[in-house]
Length: 81
Image (cartoon, rainbow, N blue to C red; front, side, top):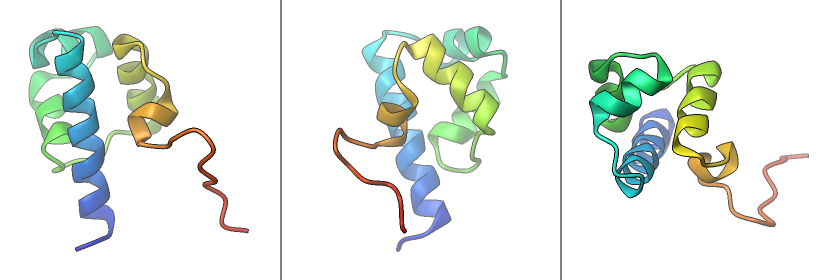
């Protein structure tokens, strides 16, 4: 299945992977990003998609670029035109 739900799950999996690489608990990252642990859990499980501003804060706290967090690789063209 492809579509928004898959994309949310993939994004959530990347957030979780980076959080674990940084040895942060959900509670710790949520506190740093200014969200609740349950909200972060919903992002990681693909149940909700973070707002761009929240995603930026998460990326900043994980010390990872938005491109990396979104799964874009170097040289990958995201334009459709």
